Image 1 (tube, rainbow, N blue to C red):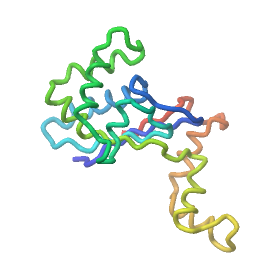
Image 2 (image 1 turned 90 degrees about the vertical axis):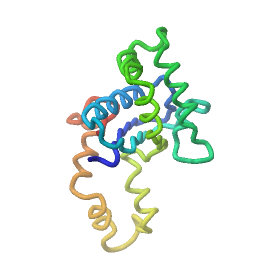
Image 3 (image 1 turned 135 degrees about the horizontal axis):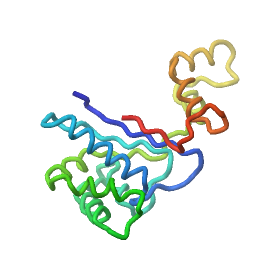
Image 4 (image 1 turned 120 degrees about the vertical axis):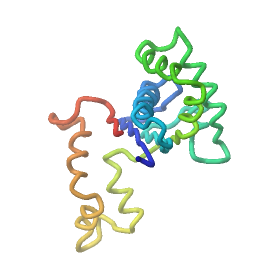
Length: 179
């Protein structure tokens, strides 16, 4: 059984993600799918990794890993309220309705397992972040690029190409979902 299910949302520009975001509700819907497949198995950690900033005051702030600000019960209340809003965004309505069809116990368990990681590096920033973390600089002589390539592995080029909007062969979506 999986110990963690990750939803990754990659946006090219700056911005905020809020409580009514399609990225949030699409992720919740995907996790509801996973719950059906898992049945009675233990619920894995449900991680939402986003390149955008969590909007100040949004329920997503309450779902960060930081124990000082984490409040899954308050986030659950807010999610249930938003899910039941008949005037809410039409795009997310089916996903919000799906969440409400879960039993209260399942909704509480699901929200309790969600961890939000915002401000994840964009694809274009990963090399510089890796160089910084491991102390390999572009100006270094020798094998700095080879070290980065080893760390990132073969798949990096494929995923980078898929997410690069300037590449005509890339994925047309403005985000990628990984489950």
